[in-house]
Amino acid sequence: MKPDKVNIGGLAVSRFVIGGNPFSGFSHQSGDVDRAQMRYHTVAKIKETLAKAESLGVNAHISRADHHVMRYLMEYWDEGGSVQWFAQTCPGVGPIAMGVGNAVRGGAKAVHIHGGVMDHLLATDRFDEAAEGVKMIHDAGLVAGCAGHNPDVFVKAEEVGLDVDYYMCCYYNPTCRDDDPVHPRGATEMFHPYHRERMSKLIRSLSKPVVHYKVLAAGRTEPAEAFEFVAHTMRENDVACVGIYTEHKPDMIQEDIDLLMAAVQKQAWFKPEAA
Image (cartoon, rainbow, N blue to C red; front, side, top):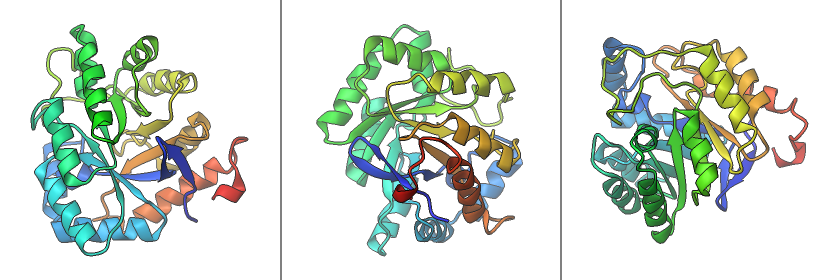
């Protein structure tokens, strides 16, 4: 079963999107898993995983706007890959402008402001910087978005009319970013069910397409239940982003797509002819 496609900012995007956190060793589980993911994900293995995803109908990849990602995508595209890159600015690398610059130079189709940065801008009353970042993305000719772990980010974005094409809504708010937008490796993270419930309720009211992410609570939620919940929360032009780590589960991509699409096909808004 292949995912259908939706429209995000004029781009045709597969309902299932492959995430990049495992490729960069961000497991959101433990330091040991971080290191295991980094060792496993050589550039060759990442390219193999992207190619497998594309063969299954996935046409978009969300990952950090850093030189590691730019390198493997350059190689992948040079060797015939065509996945669309949705780049995420990353505060550990530099400010929003640097992330946007990397995305433009690296061939991204879309850019969104990092969720930790958006959480931090909201907490420090600097939300106008998000509008400046979005304008920078649009001025570069790219589709623009913003991410967030705190649902209030999207409440604020709606209130001020932030000119984005999509939202990246995290199902969980595992660490507070009020004082620092950067996620510290090894920090204790909380994945509470009420986070997911609150974000899910909010998503249904948002005016932009939503990329649903951390839908599996970084491996803490049973996949069948997680994808049923995602499909029930989704609207017609929403997609799910899932990080892929195949070392111990080679068929993970196909299994996840099948679970998502089986659940999506039960929804009243689903158009079978689009799949």
